[in-house]
Amino acid sequence: MVPVDEAQPVAVSRKRAQTRERLLGAATRVFAERGVIGASVEEICEAAGFTRGAFYSNFADKDALVLALLEAAAVTQFEAAERTLTQLSTAAGGLPFDELVARAMLQLGSASASDRATVLVRQELMLHAARVPSLRAPYTAFVETRTRQLRQQIQEALVAADLEFVLPFDQTLELLTAAYEFDQNRLLFGAEPDLTALRALILTITRPRGETQSARADG
View 1 (cartoon, one colour):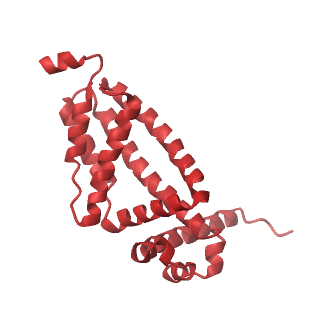
View 2 (cartoon, one colour; view 1 turned 120 degrees about the horizontal axis):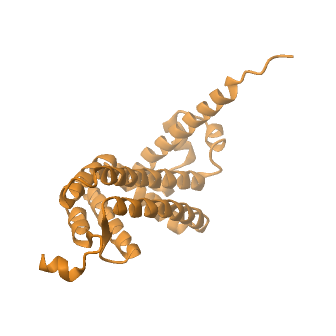
View 3 (cartoon, helix red, strand yellow; view 1 turned 90 degrees about the horizontal axis):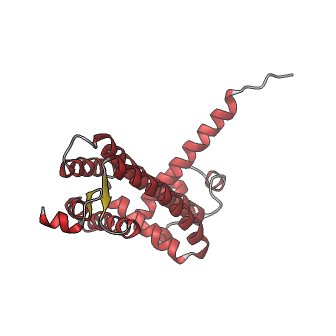
């Protein structure tokens, strides 16, 4: 009997993962130039240096590729937020609140740095998913799962820093997300990233735990 090479499945899995990543990268470039509707599977394969067979061994169709790209983009954004919250939690306790926020914004800006093409593709993918019913439910479920995880991390970071939000938690999260997305979308028109508004918002809607609005105003 020929001995089984235990390393072989790992090698095959690694190669498949690399093929998938190359296809995702090629699709991002092609979508940025031609859009989702205008791009063909053949163009994506040519850009990646693969055959159609390699494509269909990784994705059922172009919509499945779009979903994978959307999920990957969401993971990148959530991971940037998670690293920022870790920075906030780690530094909490010995620094003034405005210094904590300044450090958190520096971390977020570094971790989530995007270029125009990245933001353009992200918007293109979102619009496509909104138009295709089969993509809405799985993408929404994926984002909701990651959002629940992020909510827990935000709450833990607030406790570590002995802070709380002035507004209800869900409303605050929506405002913070909107401010961040606004800054990202400015890149589409050539503006430089600037998290000043997000920082100002955080300083406005966050307070020491237990402090009342009237006490804050008197201070």
